[in-house]
Length: 465
Image 1 (cartoon, one colour):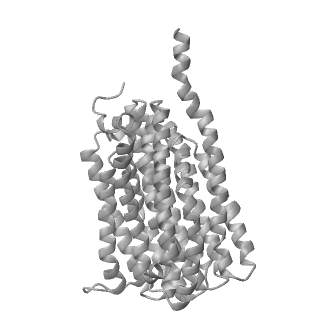
Image 2 (tube, helix red, strand yellow):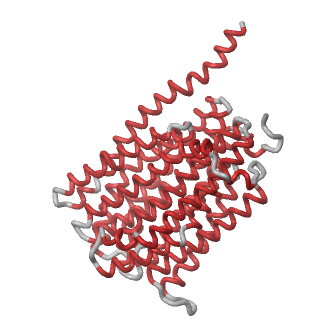
């Protein structure tokens, strides 16, 4: 039986879909835009050191993105399992999912701390032999990894808040972390107000400081205001069953994002053969695209607990309405990004102190790559729906096809032309393949999960008669 205090979570099964999705998603969309600021602000300030520093941060991004992949992916698994448990009225399992999720986030952070101590230099040396780029990259990544616990705890606590419909609190913890990062970035990078000049390392210190403060806010918010989850010491003991359910969705989600890290690493390897400027352009594109795609990911974060809750509550019609509304909204967002990249690429690049060569190469790159934005919104919503319904392997398969099976081989083949502009066409080509696969999977889910669920009441009525 569902607990009487489960008011906030229960509205996901009863409130009108449009206002519900809006109330759950808008705070998360703002939160994800704030998350984008973490990476973009670093790059903007670092670009004013020199282009070598910007290239170093771009080369460091695959590992930094891998950390985010584990943090967010595990959080998504907890989010989906916790929401579904609430929908089923299983309070004990909801509490256990939240506590086990925190333990998993801490264990993952320890792995990256060890990598920060022993693996950062070999990682950077595998990509560049330039001593200045190498120094900036090692300094930046070491701080991000060794002090990365704040990132993992912050992400987990945000997902727990979002799973119970408290997305405004999740947004606030992100916002305060980003504000701290923005304030201290120039202070630590350039040595303002008596602080020592630390260049790229200063950017990393400002980032982890924001993450730790955001994590502290998340702890307070969950303990004081999240009444749908109770934290008891006994629930922090790892449960094999709970962890397995978390990672049923979490592992494909981690892999989904980790594929992006592999793709970025391989793409950097292709582009470095042209010039370090090509790597810098690709790095800047990734920062800029986050402002287009992060709101869509925020929309997904608001959508996933609604879909998962209604899946647990056996309300397929609500799932379909949420999917349609989210798909339309996501496509509108990404189309705006496409228009901006087509008409003001130079203005966007100038924010990163781009040289004339970088402006010329970057403007063409943005115009070509941004074509995939037109398809990406719906693609991302379908992938999130797979995860919310426990079909994480479908999401993983679609991402593999887009980023590794198609994107990298096509990029490599196009690079043989000797024209770097040809390489950028691999993005819209890969997105088209991915959308085709996602559409096939969506039809399969409708036929095998949602349609039988809709027919179940009719079958029950027939039996009763």
